[in-house]
Length: 192
Length: 192
DNA sequence: ATGGTTATGTTATCATATAACACTTTAAGG
DNA sequence: CCTTAAAGTGTTATATGATAACATAACCAT
Image 1 (cartoon, rainbow over the protein chains, first blue to last red):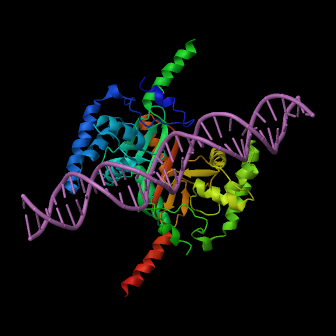
Image 2 (image 1 turned 135 degrees about the vertical axis):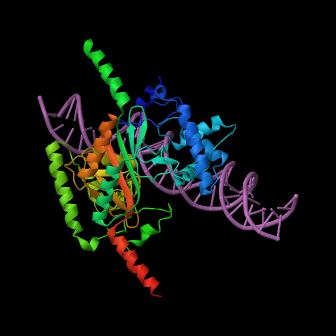
Image 3 (image 1 turned 45 degrees about the vertical axis):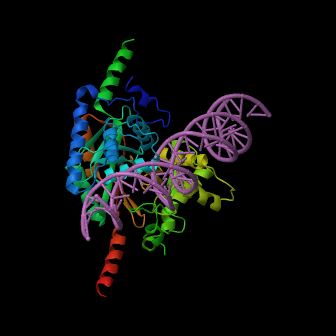
């Protein structure tokens, strides 16, 4: 029941999960996700201290909620989660967007433009040109830093005399786990 | 006066033009843009005939308006342009979004996700994995089909056993023309 | 011509994001 | 300590982008 709700999302024919609260991270059994969260938060503490910026309670909470899964999370969904998680009554959009802006500036999260959603960054110290491989079935998103990709882009940019300031690479498809799942399902059907 | 309105866009600190009606395409003097439009429309006619789908008057008009410049165009701006261009009184969002959906399906346009805007495709017959180099100053957007980029992505995908279905690559920065412009401006300032 | 399919019109609403201004917390310097 | 300017957060309203649901119109194959 964890992975099915995203597949039923009626918004698009090729919809992608944007991490509803109930949807436990795919591959949840394959890794200790608590460790992911803790590591991310600890690193955020360090980086912010270093940069002499304030990772306030709110901002830290937002980061923690985004890290609840490895799937992108929408701002309004995040607001709901904030209201539940905290003792807060109501959280208005500007509050959460400001926190998100901060986290993006500090390179602690990425905005996933094709989903209007946000995801924790796994390489917060590195320049942010990584490719995001996003599974349209389970939402699982893998951040990949590929030197060949970056070199290819840099080459193309220099050929045009284009000065790169920012780049977004989002690759939609099906992750290994979901492919394996369907493969086994298909073989069962074939047996009928 | 053509290129300045996008730089003044108050929406973002790092705003990018999304092709207001007044903003003539950058490099307008550098090429015969009428020919661009005609070529795009003619090719669309052919491709749709081939695919046995109907490039209706509305859809064709939308495509033509998107091709008015080489900068991405937002759906609501497009609606305004439709109302003016045609003798129509009012065009509602679903009308224009349906046309856009059609054009995307036929690979005649791209959606620029980081801007929520749309741009004509310069390679409508090819698979749609091109990188878009978007100038944040003038909006000029160059579609680049790079084999190295594609190979790098495919390699990374296969390593993860990820099945690619779609991909968006948007690179934000400053185009050669805008860099040259500022460079000359800066040198003038330095002379004071 | 006529009936099924495809396309468009229309109204309402959802979803995402920002503007503007008020209030509170923080921390740095006296 | 105190006080005060800056940074952060709260609040209300609204801009902007996109879709749902259903009605009407155009197309075209028999």
